[in-house]
Image 1 (cartoon, rainbow, N blue to C red):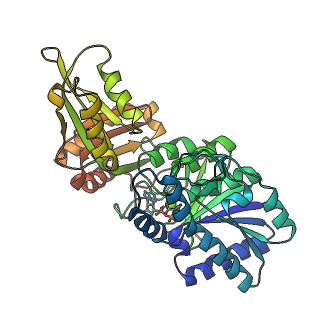
Image 2: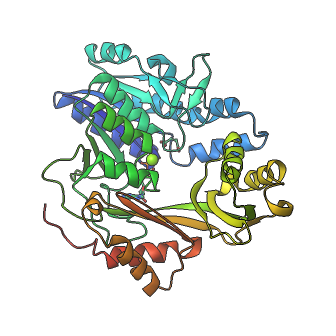
Length: 409
Ligand code: ADP
Ligand code: ASP
Ligand code: MG
């Protein structure tokens, strides 16, 4: 078989752990497989590099920041290759440009466009394990790019797709994908198999165990993803196309995105084009808006509320006051005073079951949690709550939906 293994930051966070990873990769190769290993930076390293960059950064230097933050993975790739040799095997490291991981030019959130797997195949022919630095690529001008936080997952699955690997193993500090973040819900249940579709929603709604684009690659290129622990041999969670033996549950998981801000723009003229002007100006400024709600209009005026990432919060107010002052009566964009979080329940079973929203709102009401915004789609329901109650809300929903209980496959 041809197997791609991706090891996250905590799995390569020390010399001891690198030794363990080297042994694991070598054991996989010795079992008769070709092995490509994708590595993250050692835990804490990307944050350290970002903090260093922020000393000089003025908001327009993303190209240079990528040059800096991509080095974390370079160090791990070299170290792991050495560790594999020391363990009695042979390995060769590759940086993004050495396997032509071509991306667009959106620094800090670049998307992979193509990969040249030939050098990796050459490496297998020489009997070596290929060790690839995750998270990094290069654009058409040769500039180094990075794929966004958690981006090594995407490198892993994209390399697996380019190689036509049998599957991609994502090694991390939990032994699979759970019904909620096990750090918040200690009795969360491990899911044996989950569809790409549900995992896409969980990943986009805050379950950081897999980066969203990694799941997209898996789905588009038909790469089964096995999320499992570096520190045990337990079978983890398989992310695949929908299969018959998948759990028949209505709600499969709960996820949350923290660090959001809610903004309310007061007294916007309730006339055609207002929402377009408002949100177009934010989109022109590169600000992603979520969960929009418009209140009932009174005297031809209406309030609009929406959420943005806390990082975009200041810029959002600036844009609203600069370019939409005529719309925002007296330039008054009002910001919520408390940070908010978006909490979501996800499950393909919702398509055929009604009443999930009602049950969710009932559980949250019982727990005394106020809902600020609500949005629903075919397989998910999201609500915005005060950030300081989000963990309680997750636990209440987990319990209320009985997600800790065993299910029949
Ligand atoms: P790595 O450094 O290996 O990429 P991450 O920190 O990115 O690891 O992802 C693993 C973490 O994801 C876990 O430690 C866990 O706290 C968190 N997580 C969030 N939601 C879930 C979930 N539904 N199932 C498992 N882990 C989750
Ligand atoms: N090192 C990068 C990060 O911390 C990429 C990754 O670990 O997946 O986000
Ligand atoms: Mg990660």
